[in-house]
Amino acid sequence: MLSSGQNYQTETRAVPVRVLYEDGSELSGSLLIPRLSDFTEILSSDPPFLTFTSDEGETSFIYTSKIRSICPRSQPRIKPLDARKKEPDEPFELLNVTRETKPEDIKSAYENTLKSYDPNREVSTCLPNEIVDYLKAKTHAIHQAYATIEESLKAEL
Image (cartoon, rainbow, N blue to C red; front, side, top):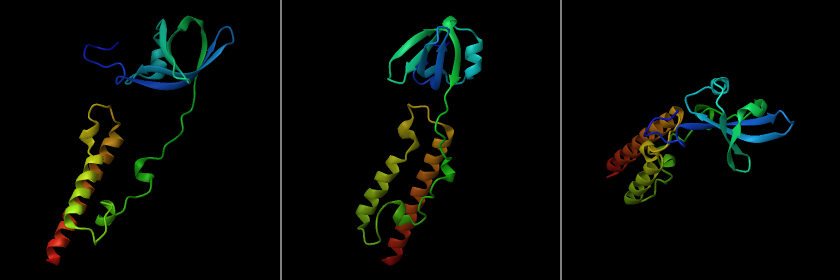
């Protein structure tokens, strides 16, 4: 049950399933369950209705007493962020500029790149901790890259 002030969209998660009814018919889609609840916990609590979204995107409520079984469907596995291609270490590559780029264009590239990875930009959504940590690390790397470039430009003068 959601308390006042909680948003149904952000406090639930979709679990891909195949629902088999007693009459032999079947549905394929996702059940919406509370984000912090376990799938089996929801099914064992015997709620009269479950919120279901079909693969076509239609949302409905299904009556649980007519269900024979619910089979979770596998979701594609995603490699952890740290196992993906490493980001460039070179400061100019990180900001997507060259050594010949004008200082004001470097600063503009720095600000635009920083905005795109700002973790506070997505504050209204419930991002997984792994994503928030990645965004924080990325903004830290962008700050360091710009500081390194600034120092090298001052040294050239």
